[in-house]
Amino acid sequence: MSRDGDGRETQEGGAERTPHGYTDYEQARWTQNGTYEPLLSEKDSTRVEIGDDVDSPLPEGLTREELTLPQLSEPELARHYTRLSQMVYGIDTGPYPLGSCTMKYNPKFTEDVAALPDAAVHPDRKAETVQGTLEVLYRLQEYLGRIGGMDAVSLQPPAGAAGEFVGIRVAAAYHADNGGEERTDVIIPESAHGTNFATAALGGYDVVSLPSDEGGRVDLGALEAALSERTAALMLTNPNTLGLFERDITRIAELVHDAGGLLYYDGANLNALLGRARPGDMGFDVMHYNVHKTFATPHGGGGPGAGPVGVVSELAPYLPAPRVRRRGDGNDASYELFDPESTIGTVHGYQGNWLVLLKAFAYIARLGDEGLTDASAKAVLNANYLASRLEYEVPYGPFHHEFVASAGAQDAADVAKRMLDYGVHPPTTKWPEIVPEALMTEPTEVENKASLDDLAAAFNAVANEERETLERAPERTSARRIDQASAAREPRLSWHALEDR
Amino acid sequence: MSFDVPTDRQYLESHEWALETDGVVRVGITDFAQDELGDVVFVELPDVGEAVTAGDAFGVVESIKAVSDLYAPVSGEVVGVNDAVFDAPELVNDDPFGEGWMLEIDPSGDETDLLEAVEYEDQIA
Picture 1 (cartoon, rainbow over the protein chains, first blue to last red):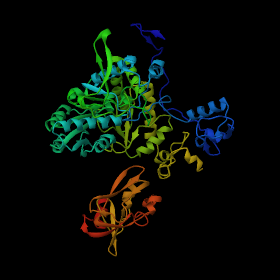
Picture 2 (picture 1 turned 45 degrees about the vertical axis):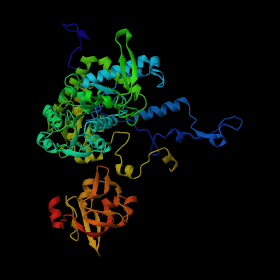
Picture 3 (picture 1 turned 180 degrees about the vertical axis):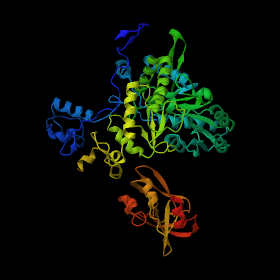
């Protein structure tokens, strides 16, 4: 390393790093007699006898005297889990450009923060004894409100989809109080995330599907035709699923509001806008935040998540109860829980998933205004740089944080399987359907130029391969082509299936 | 790629077929439909005795790629259900016009716009 004129460290030889190509990859594959690394219970199933000399206060029917438990040494156990870890792929292994999902890297320090002893707070403690916890929650409400341009935020919904549902319930409660009982329609662009349609239907609304215009954006003529006195809301993602910014958003907001409807913002693609544009300023009335996409908390995958909801002041009285508010300022500040006056009720225990929210708070606080704006800019830059390196066509643009390439004459699903052989995770495939054989790609801000070049090399290697090669893939991974039909027809969903073997 | 379009029956634009035998209308999905869907993994149908309405959805077919509604060619009462496709949904892929049939309807008179084989062939060409 040396220092340049400004005293910054520069790398000797600058661009002399290895030229980039796809990775020569071979995933570990631990199998025995044709089956994968056995389960612990398959390695050993010793009957452990407790004996009948143990006094138990439990009724006889609830106790047993022996139990089957694997009896393994520490190295056996360590090797088991190490082998399993060698047979998986994740963001700690390589890039993960799964479009629409925003699989950005979750900095490890957020785990440290969530593991602090002070973070382990019993949810039933009295407010005056957990002022620090409440302050974090209050500040997170404020941060999210400022980032989204919203007046009030509820942290309670435990997932993005739950946030959507709360947002639509809040909109319904608002309409019910404002003579809007006849509003039965929710309008959704056909390229929207599937959750939008499900949310509207679960909320009791009729879904009105909106076609895209030739450029891949909302068709204003179709929107005007769809709007009526029955319109409860338009649900919109901006940038949309093609990564395109809805340039007519202020006109769209005007049309929806003139019809008496509300404008709902799906926060899935907020990562593209941080610090530059706010849904509230565009005219949105209610939104949810996917903190796992935008603020680096873990993707739920069925585990604890968070999907906070922000609203403009007219809708604030309907938010879930309780929320956190501050009394007094400076050294006199204190924090308390309160129920919004016309609340739709409680949608999850306490404040939602506190430790997930704490990670989002830690991420926002650490990056700050400049860091968040920079992350967003790099997400957009990375998507555009990667797209510029691909041999696949990208039919719609200009795009922001993600783009949808077309695999052309190749089958997008086969392309995805083959990309695994080059040691990268493939993009989302076959969706949105507006692009034939879609490869929906979102590298996120966390990959550097070298990593993006490697990723592009993997895409381009596959782009030039024969159909037969693609159909055989993957060949270098621990698991080969999965038989999806059998998996769906005869699902094994729990360990009970082991007993049938 | 060419698909079977038997001329002994009629078709819906939504890719169902209807075959009338002795006053009962048997319904299934076409070869083209099963190919578009890919491996069928689940079929949901009404029970015998239920009423179906021409042009309305009567059931659901789910594949590894998509979930689609099934539309009734005629109105009437369900008099037969092919239980075999519940246990072996692959029948829909293997033999869409035969063993992969889904429903038998005793028609009450109303029917939706039905296409002749040659017209349906044009549609999927």
